[in-house]
Image 1 (cartoon, rainbow, N blue to C red):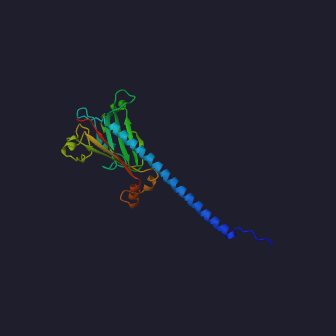
Image 2: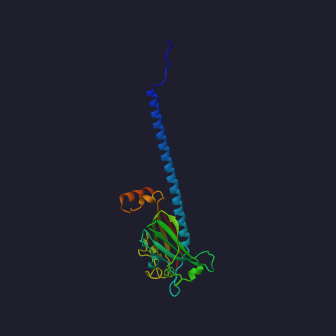
Image 3: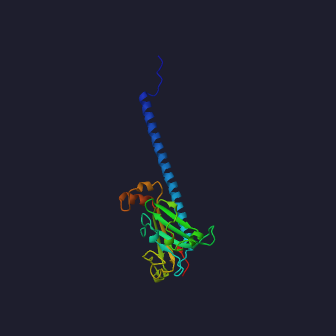
Length: 247
């Protein structure tokens, strides 16, 4: 009688198949998690690079900003009423800035109007630009009240906060650790150190999150546990310091 050939039993095959399936499932989950982390990291890198680029652009443009007193006023202002939109700006977290600056453009002349604002509803940083010809036609020209119909274009998304801190020369000279001028800067209707002047130094700050995190913040606000946790995990702040010409 021939000896029976040894082989795997059905039960053994089923156990081996189950183990293989579990290992494959674990491998798929690991690969999926790694891919998700890579995609999120890549997305954050892109978002933060765009935010840094926008911040550098603002700093580059605003360093040449001008202001002058009556009778030929040129305005530099923050959160001025004539440019306020819905939602209204909030000092320190969601601001608007208006300035006039010599800037390359296709029109005759070089004084152009530039403004930046933060939309706290859409979490966008937006820019408005008026070329020198149309800036000259403002009524009154070079004043924010003469440009109430600005065309805004989004330059950065996922922006949770946009803040501009203004320092006068007096602020900088008064102490070794200066604090910014507490009120919004307004060269045509502000404090004595503001009238006809631009700030001596600006500190510009933006806080951003990537577009994967942003939808999760919908309907939430600062102070909410989920909001604060997500922003702590995914939020990044960028700042730029800008020195303007002395008066």
